[in-house]
Structure formats: C-alpha cells, structure tokens
Length: 95
Image 1 (cartoon, rainbow, N blue to C red):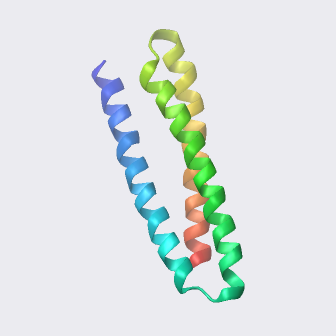
Image 2: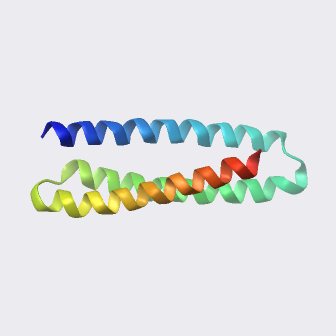
Image 3: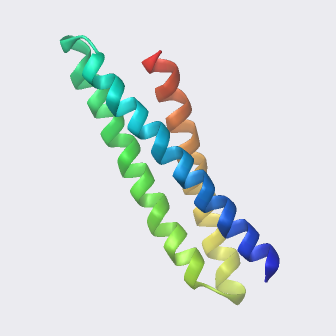
C-alpha cells in the first residue's frame, strides 16, 4: 500500500510541475509575435487536452484497487508519457 501511495504522490507532484510549465507557456504566448500566437495557443490547447486525459486516468487510479490497479496504472502511465512528450516538444518549440 505504501508503494501505491508513493506512486500516487509522485504523479501529483509531476502534474503540479506540468501545470506550472503550462502556465509559463501561456505567459509566453502574450509575448509572441501575432503571427505565432495562433500556433502557440493551438499547441497549448492540445497539451491541456492531454493533461485533462491524464487527470481522468489519474482519478481512476486513485480510486482503483487490486487487479484493477494494474490495468488503470498502465493507462495512467501511457497518458503521462504522452503528456511528457508533448510538453518537451512544446518547450523546445517555444524557445
């Protein structure tokens, strides 16, 4: 049970960090040239959708137990990987 709690806490910390990065990107959009704003906003909206998908998986994970935990954990990890990849690409693009 302790491993589960540690895992959930780590995901929560990662999500908070991700939300901070997303807020930083939103702030940078205000500084972007007008022709780039639409592209940046589109990327941010895509990342927000991925975040929302992860949050849904994360909420299921917190509520699951037993065998369901393993299945939901796999889906949560997949959603987190997509989120991580998306944020890494966006950060590179925003520089």
